Image 1: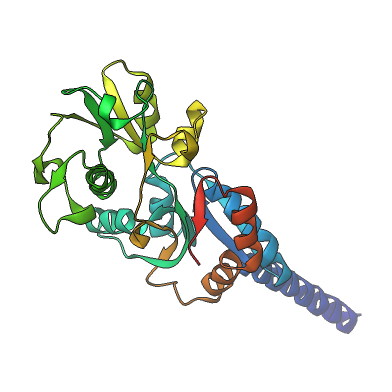
Image 2 (image 1 turned 180 degrees about the horizontal axis):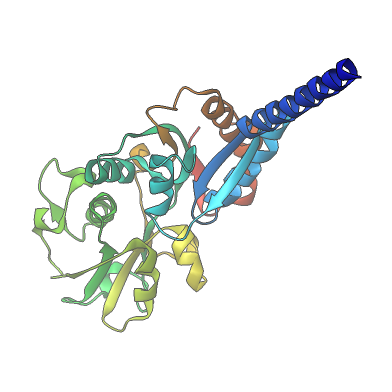
Amino acid sequence: MKKSLFIMILMFSVMIAGCGANKKDSEDKVIKVASQAPPMTDVVKEAAKEAKKDGWEIKLVQVNDNVAYNDMVTSKEADASFAQHKPFMEKYNKERKANLVAIQPIYDAKVGFYSKKYKDTKSIPNGTKVAIPNDISNEGRALAILEEQGLIKLKDGVGVNGTTKDIVDNPKDFKWLKVDLLNLAETYSESDVSLVYNYPTYISKIGLKPADALFLEKNIDTRFSIQLVAREDNKDSEKIKALHKAMKSDAVKKYLKEKHKDTLIPSF
């Protein structure tokens, strides 16, 4: 009797241990990816279909601002993020003493300037406001686009790293309205704003798309490709390798070309 009881207890213990191991194995196959808005979130969902073929589950964690997705990766609440370009990530690293790393560029957004009142740059009056991002990485890109159009002149060699302090010629005497990237679209309807810089993701909130822009970026700088981002300590892990494979799959590239050709260009 005692021997039978012992065997039953032993078998029960093995079953419990087995269930625990299976649960742990299942959890180890889950890759948490923090993202913010379409089309980034759409791409993560598409990559999840590919990862599933290899036994991985990509779990999208959607956030509401441009800091939370980095905070989640830094604090290890998420394994990776997909929501930003490399200069923005580097700015975050510097400010927060973080160790995020860019893993793979996925696409280049078609960015540019929009105007509610004017159909060409010659019509824009002197002294009006131009709305640009208030973070230095996107500010530099916006100013570089204005220089492409001959609307301003930056110091030689500044390129996309410039700020309004680097403007050496401003023939239309533009006044600068610096706004958080998430709120830039709201300035489109302001009466004293002539130009608004924006990404397709955010300008779509007011029903606009790149085809509606007064002008778009001519020379795409690949540093601004939207990147898959992880941490220094997990960049070589099996999870990130699986995520990387799924994100740069032929299926994702096809999805980008077919569903988002008006707003972006695949960068892999």
